Image (cartoon, rainbow, N blue to C red; front, top):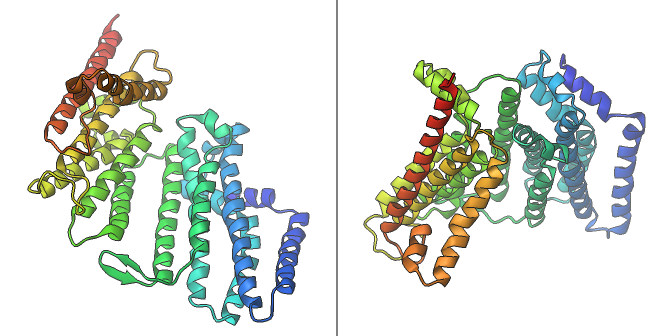
Length: 438
């Protein structure tokens, strides 16, 4: 096991005191549970308490340690030294993922042994599936926190130094915990077929664990200046669209188009406001395009253009599929063609506004300024126009209306998008002229 990063994290995680304290505290908790439980319910109580201990030790505490493996590096200013090491992205990824959380898995394995023994003794169903699901969910949380923190530090390192995205992972872990606590044996209905509850949870946990590990590896690769093609983020958007649409499937693909539109919309905004959109980066893209170096152009392309293109595609598919329906909101497709196109074009407009402020000569806090202008444009000005009784101006400023379906909405929003794209083109022209001046 020749992985210096893994060994370093092992030395930082374990101590003589910890090796003794972990099994001692777990044993005391389980003994207290056994003594407090009645005879027939003793095994079930041990199973429940061991599961709760695993969730605390591996999910929550382990996620804190995985979060600290990145936050502490950036806070102590040792991350740059890590980036200049000879470690490959995969070696760095699993060294941090399993090295920083090794002590938590040390306690988690003891909990798993009790969960398995008590579950089998109590005659509980699907014990092996439960064990694997718990482990896969823990890996998903650990790898997800590492990926999100590394991605965020490229955009705002001060935020990561103040604690990173661990709080987001804790919220997600609590949601998983509540879902696991309300464990039921009713089957899931997904894409018109029924799947056993335990089997579906197991497959879902394994799927997202694989996605989280892959995401951590990709982000580490980018941090180590190993260039990758930007296909993973759009591919994950398609995967999430198919996964979520299966729960609302009603016998046609309208559900997939609508779910895909909302998923790509959210993921586009998430990437748009967390990636670096500097003028230097886009000038490099223009230079690579002029030289027809397409692989280099793709390697330097941000993540969000791929999901923006998918969002437009889903909007067009939804518009084509629901175009012949009556102009009323139906239970079959609450989001109809004009509204879908309006949302997709709004995304294009907002991307153009962000690029316009990002391409300024003294671009500072472009994201904050963009959010402020979007708040004024989408909420304050339409509200003032509505109060003043100028309905035409209100509709022009905010044509998205879920109560009245009209094809005028995407036409007006396309004008917004064209204005934003024109401003970006003007900003690029200004920067080119400033560069060409002697």
